[in-house]
Amino acid sequence: MKAKLIQLNEQQFFIRIAPIVLLLVMGIGFNIATNGRFGSARNLNLIVTQAIIVATVATGAVFIFGTGNISIALGATTAITAAIMANVYLMTESVVIMIVVAIAVAILIMIVTAVLSTVLKVSVMFVSIVMMVLFQAILQTILGAGTIRLPYAMTSALTRGNFHYWSFIVYFILCAILFHFTGIGRSIKFIGSNNFCAEQSGIYTKKYLMLAFIISGVGIGLAAIMTSIRTGTIGVNTASSLNMDVVLAIVLGGMSVFGGTRSYIYAGVLGAITVTLLNNGLLMVGVSPTILQLVRGIIFLTLIFAGQKRPDRLPDKEI
Amino acid sequence: MQTGGHLISSMLDIRNIIRDLGVTALIAFALSLNLGSGRFDLSLGAQRLVATIIGGNIALRLGFNGIGVLIMAILFGLLAGFVVGMIFITFRVPPVILGLGMAMVYESLAFAGSRGLGLQLFGAPNTRMLVNPNFTLMVLGLATLFVFVLFTYTKFRYEMQAMRGSQKIAKTSGINVFRHVVICYTIAGGLVAIAGVLSAAMAGALLPTLGMTSNSAVIAMTFPMFIGTYLSRRSNIALGIISASLTIRLFGFGMVALQISTALNTTINMILFIGFLAFLANRHIPDLRKREKARIKEAKAKIKERKELSLAS
Image 1 (spheres, rainbow over the protein chains, first blue to last red):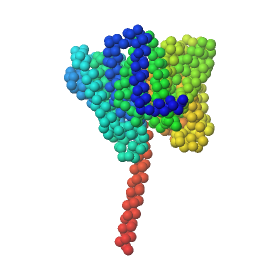
Image 2: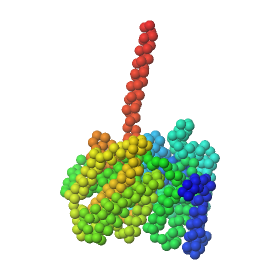
Image 3: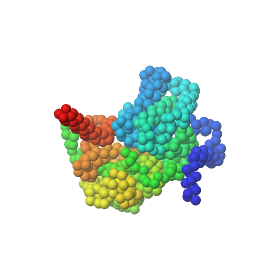
């Protein structure tokens, strides 16, 4: 029985179909539990709007996770990018400059993180942990208890123009092409499967790690704009839950936390919808935020244990 | 010099330093158990919360005094750490990912278990001893002694050093790596529980948090832990961490004296930390270059010698 389950878990078809089934089961379950309120057009629209920010960051994060590395500073990077971008807008009052600055700042931050890992040889995971605390502290230093407010006219104009939908669609298509139809994606998956073999095969791992961070940086820049135009204000709590949502989305989307061949670009999107649906559904059912976190934690761990191939020995040498 | 006075000018300053040192060193000890072997447990902060809040509240309800609160928190800390360790060896997922999941669960348990109130020690009967700096020093001394003995005179030390080198070789050498890892997680849980009780005593209460914010208290202590591990090359890990924790605390004290905000202090600390990590990762490079230069010099001398020999012949 156990052997059959492991065999099933290793099948590509099962890996790809399981997250979709999970999403459907959750959706149907919540719809029944809320007497159809969950499935209303207004609520579904709200879920999509909320999910799109997580999906944008998670789509880029697939490139980093695909290499077998873990970054937990994506939320903090989004927040600091949003703060810088908002200040630039208030100074210039130009939307074009704001968008360019947001993407450039996010890419720059990600390049610094990648340089620390590739050139200075500090582990990605550890750099990301330190960066997360550093960015939160910088944001606290800059903003304190205050917030940056963006003009309603600008945020509503971008919202009406469906900036978030268009930017996400273009970014997702580009990422899908890069990840599944070019050598970049193949190399990233190869590095994630076996870093040593990839290096011995002539793949310059540092280059691909840098590329993964840059691509992810574009997504973070876009997510910073989306977050800012959605809320209109940037404070110390901006994107505070984004980081955990992204990691959760990647796992719920069916991607392996070890990266490699079990990495799919759609995992980020599928997972983002599932995470938002889960949050929304549980709150509608009447679950308190405390228990919501407990449920999220249990589902996260269960899916990791169920979906990941158990290695023969303990994972180590993360630092 | 900058403040125009002494950094430590009263008994209150000494008390504050002792309390801060206790919390910092205990968390750094806990981190060193797993981090030294490359496992970063992101649930340590949440373990600190759940052990102190649940264990402490049970002790208070049973009418225990300060020592009872401490012992009960340690027991819950050991249990919390043991559970994480067992899950880690059973499912073998990356420690950071496991830490994130367990932190979510433990934070919720600490919050829900105390109805958001946490552990309130202010005004609690028979718990005044917990705020006594002599008691803090005694607890810190005992914990340091425990870590000193553990890392110097026990079989555990050999197992840990073998694991730091190579898990595969350690296993082949007959070390039960799974048991060793569970012990590391369990002891770390107990140590952070002590830190939690000291923090609660210092502030009068320990409030639960949600949204993975419990991590920050632990991540901040990784800097003294790394400095301590570096210093331990010349002494012992226990002494190294105590020295590093004291240095960091005095640095923080200096920052407060210069009226630098906590956020800016954290920013400076993290920048220094990144620099220190980069130094640790590259400290062997000057030596390598020196050896390389010596090798080239030797080779050039040999070529010159051969040329001279061939010319002479």
